[in-house]
Length: 632
Image (spheres, rainbow, N blue to C red):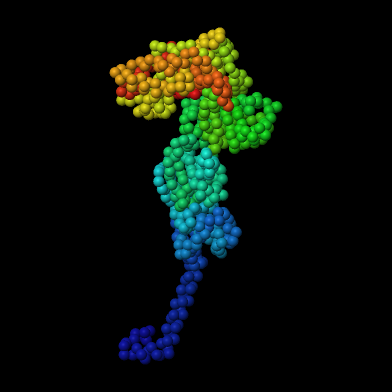
């Protein structure tokens, strides 16, 4: 080994010596052999790192993986890749037909299917966060990266852009079109997350073709990056104040994780009282469940046959429905809802009894409450969903209750005399709220009591006095604008009898031609010296109706049937020359009576917060907790 101790003086000689060169080569060869032997030993013990093809990294179990190579972006909207040689279920679909040179794409799910790409190793090209995805669809044309993001709950959605990730079940979707031009505006959706929070979704018309081919009702998805827009105020289908809007940077992918549970659906049921309170307000659309009494005027039975030609031409089906032993209501199914009902009803062999219809619009037709289907409405019968199965079980155990009301009687529209009204009220077997049309002449307007009440400007429920302002119990608001509404008692007569009618809400406007709010305001403007608690006398517009003969739509309420009052509530007034509207009055339809518009206690007078005194509106007129001071 002393030959390796070289001094400067003999370096040239030693370096050129053949034995010295041989020693150097031998040592190098020995080092290589020893290194190879050690590497082989480590590989046999499982301690070495597997070699990977250049440009491909192995898939990590839970941590993030930095991709090496070039991801591909396609706008073909196909989930599978016909030209790909990847393993099945490993295709990536985004959008754009742009090959991103030298850039990587990171996703919170497994990217599956790269159109026109080759991956001979069958390696995953994405990042998994514990949730398996099947497809990624994006609207952006720039090939933007899909970055793993924090999961956002629906309750946390606010106005503006969001970079987080939504996970949800798609309950239902429908087209949104301009009601006049019928131009497609976009695709509306009903979404629900694992917290059972429901929110409305929206895809603009220009992006529908990007996402719709990969979506199905009932499917579970995740959405990366979206925009929170304000929810519409008319005809809302969800309680949230915001809507999830698919933006140009949104990325949609399937979500497949058995550990995450999403509800199948969620319904918002209303009964006849709630529907009646919301009538004609164009507010939220709620759901109804009950049992069928009539189909297009036919009683359910073995001989019931649906007229397909008539339904196709009219595009509607009219049902009479009832919830438990409550009032019978008309239910109009239009277009898709009508065809869906016919299909399901025929599939049941005509034996279906229970019906659930979503997102209904309550309207006043001919003075009576009716429910009308809307574009997002869905129809379920008997055993279709858990809610209908539960109701069917109740019905089977309570057939006597469900069949207590004779549909032929309570849904029959007819014009009666005052005497026939009194006779109906006295019948022992007629203890069912019903609607009738009665032709009578106005004999007098009752003086000496208030002919109006102050109601909420939104829901028309009777307002109550707060510390400094008027309040609405129904809306839950502590400061509202009070609006005068009719609650006027009149005396009427026909050829044989006379009766007391109470004009409620719009019925007074239809008779006098003037709104109550206008008449009250005009009085105080003309009499500035009177105090706010002054009792406004009956206006001339009402007095001028004396002697007029009209057709009155009157309600025989529970209070009439039990003998608590003989005064009949008028919900609509029609002139004799005007033909009847399409939907005639049907018996036992939910419309508020006079008693339901008043509080049990008199409201204190407050000149600073209302036009006049908020008193008991009429002497000897029923007064109870207000439901809704509006009709017609």
